[in-house]
Image 1 (tube, rainbow, N blue to C red):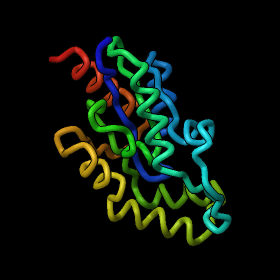
Image 2: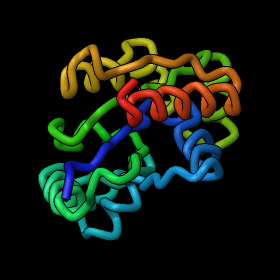
Image 3: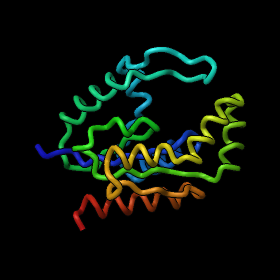
Length: 171
C-alpha cells in the first residue's frame, strides 16, 4: 500500500474553503471537513461563547489524522479542508491551497453569519496578517503551499483541480 496523496484547503473563515471543497467533490474528489473530524473524534475541549466557537484539542486531532492516513493508500488524491489543516502530518501532504478573499467581502460574509464585533475583528486581523498562509508555509514548506485569491468559486476550484491532477500524475 502506497502513501496517501493528500491535499489541503486552508484559509480564514469566510474565504470559501467549504464552497470550493463542495465544487471539488462534484468533480469526484474525496474531501474531509477537518472540523467534523474533530467533533466526531471527541477532540473538542470547550466552547468559547464569546467567539461562538469550539476549542479543539490539537493533539487529539493530530492523532486522529495520523490514524486515518495510515489506513489510506495512494490510489487517488484525498483532501482535507478547514483552518486547522496545518495539523495534518507533513509527511503525507503533497500540497496546501490557502484561500484568501477581499476584506470588504469578508466583512460582509461575517455580518451575514451574525459574527460579533470581536470575532469579525479577530478574523479580519488573521486575514491581514496571513496567519493561515504563514502557518501552512511553516508546517509544509513554501514549495508545497499556494496562496489563491478567491474571487470566483468555480474558477478557484478549477485551478485547484488542475494543480492536484498535475501533481498526482507526476507531470
